[in-house]
Each structure stands twice: as C-alpha cells, then as structure tokens.
Length: 433
Ligand SMILES: Nc1ncnc2c1ncn2[C@@H]1O[C@H](COP(=O)(O)OP(=O)(O)OP(=O)(O)O)[C@@H](O)[C@H]1O
Ligand SMILES: [Mg+2]
Image (cartoon, rainbow, N blue to C red):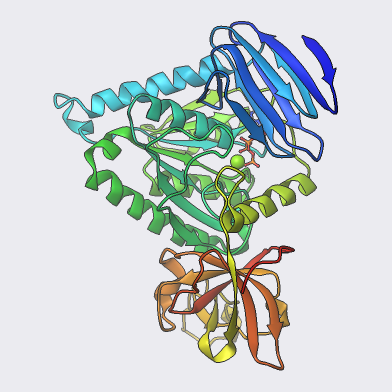
C-alpha cells in the first residue's frame, strides 16, 4: 500500500490481488472519491468502471472486491485497509445455485418448477451483512439478464423506502455503485414503527398482503417468475423475531433460507421449517462492523432524507405546504384491545391490531413522518393497502388551525388521509412553499 498526501486531500492507492477486498469507511465530514485505476473490481456486486470517479458520502461503509487484480485510489479522509479474506466465493456459489434453479424453472421438462424460480430469504442477527448479501445476489442475477423481485421486510433499516415500511421492487438493472438500486415503482406498505414486535399481528397481516402482491408479479411476468424473489429481513431473531422469520418463510413460500453467521439460528430453523426448505449457513464478512444505535439512527435519518431530497447523484426538490385541519384526516392503524375480562361473557375480543382510528391533530405530530393513503374516506382497508408516499410534519399551528408538511412533489395530492407513524425526522432545510 502506498500513501501520499496531496494539498488538503489525502490520496491513498491500493494494489489488490485476486479475491482481495478494499474496505473503507468515510470517516470524516467530507466525501471520499473512489477510482479504479487498473484491473477490474465490484462494489457489492456492481461493476466499478475504470477511471470513473465515485463519490461516497460521510458515514458510507464500502468494500471494493476484485476477482482478479485491481489498482484502486481513494481521495479524502477514509479509514481503509485491504483484506485477503472474504466470503465472496461462498456468496457467488450461492448465486450459482440460484441460477441453476432459474434454469430448471425455465426448462419445460421439469414440470413442477416451470415458471417459478428460487425464493430465497436472508436471515441472521443484526450487522452480519444480510442487506449487503441481498444486494450482491440481486446484482449477480441482473448481470445474468435476470429480473428478480427484491423484498425488504426490515422495518428498522428498510432499503426500499422510509423506515417503518416493508416493500418490494423489481430489479432490472444493477445497483448504482454509490446509491444502490433505483427505487422506481416500489410496492410499499406502511407499518409505522421500527420494531415488528410493536404490533406483531399487523406486521404479519402486511407480510401476507405483500407476499400476495409479490406472487401476483411473479405470475404476471414470465421472466420475473423465473428470476425469483430475494428477501431481506431484520436482525431481530429472538422470541417474536424468530416467529416472524418463520411466518415470512411460510407466507413467501421460500425454498431457500440463507442464515448468516449464527449457527444456533441455522439449527433452530432446520428443526422448524418444512423439509423442502433448503437451509444454508454462510459466514459473515469480516468487513461488516457492528453499528452503534447512534449509527443506526443516523442511517435511518439518511433514509428519510434520501426519500425527500434524493442523493448527490439524483437530487429531488421537495416543497412545503400549509394544510388547513379541515382538509386532512389523520388516522392511526392499530389500537389497544379491550382486555378479555372486560368483555361480556362469551364475547370474543375484536382484533384491534389493524383497526383504523382517527388520530387527533396536535403539536405531538411535529417531526413525524405520515404516510399518504390512496383512500378518500376512513376505511379499514387503509391498514393493508400500499401507500403512495410520505410527508413530514414541520409545524402544527393550533391557532391558525393548519399544519405545514414537507412533500416530495410540488403539489400535495388528494385525497388527504394521512396515516400516523412513530418515525420522526427533523428537517432543517429551508424549502419553498
Ligand atoms: N465486506 C464489507 N466490508 C466493509 N463494509 C461492509 C462489508 N459488507 C457490508 N459492509 C457494510 O456494513 C454495514 C452493515 O451491513 P449490512 O447492512 O449488510 O448488515 P445487516 O446484517 O443487513 O444489518 P442490519 O441487521 O442492521 O440490517 C453496511 O454499512 C455495509 O455497507
Ligand atoms: Mg439489513
């Protein structure tokens, strides 16, 4: 490794041998530029072009891997090292196994699997590289002209939409090296909180609805069906989290579960899941570091920030609107159920987990992210119907009876049924009204 200082920026040059990985964290407040000078390399499965400058924002954690040889340059403050040990061979073998199943699905002689490719779910504790491996597998699939569906069930660190959601996108081109996958036309369900355990029953209802929407897509389009489904999950694996993994495997009818890192989980799932589900155990990469709760919070804020403002490569220009109270209805999904002992004898407790109830407008809503429902009146279907976007409440004026919201578009769409979420975002930008 050669390290030189040039004016105010630091240039570091790295020579990578076969199967090496350069790992770096953008540790300062400034961006870091990555350039492939020679050879070939990829970032989480996306090909890095030679002599192109890729600019990563502060906080980014990146791995530049080469199957052959590469000379890579970093400019800026980056904490970087080269590792000769990576699990990439095992990850590409997993991809090869999925590709084999896709070929079988595409082969009319194998009657039982015709048209339906592999459905793989990635599970494991927090910070083992589940999201990264899903990205790698989607990238490898699309680089072989497949077009899988990527499902993200992680309500805490969702990579498709805002935190507090689950959703799916159709992958038909590799992820941008810096920004990840394009998020066009996602199917997004609002759960409204960061932990599946907050309202298990609602979470499962959304899992079921999303799995049905995904299945419809795999039937609708032959290529999608053959390409299959890649499902990312959250790192909550104890108690209720384990049950949620099992539910997800059932509803999405997964045929492969890849367990990252934790052998105990691997063993438990072998006992619980039906025999036809193939369970594989994979090591985590030494490059994935444990993130503190502050780093997680920061990355959630960045996700909301990205939803409204886009990225450096693709900026959005959101607008602010004053909405009179009488032009909007705020609702909440899920209420406390009445304890059984308070009900008349013989009466079954009603399911309150997805009950849609009015939510009073008050200053309590300040900084909350609200989901935009497509309905124009209060109906139970609000709870399990995809949302068409989000706003953030910037102000609530109880005297003028209006609230100010940040909206990604230059008009605030009707109908205006906003769904409460526990997600908060402190927006300190000045944006046009
Ligand atoms: N090989 C690697 N080298 C360096 N950094 C990496 C590597 N693989 C992943 N990372 C980074 O480590 C962080 C955690 O990885 P990732 O999000 O995939 O883990 P996870 O298991 O999905 O975590 P969570 O449980 O929070 O969802 C990410 O910032 C990712 O960019
Ligand atoms: Mg993740």
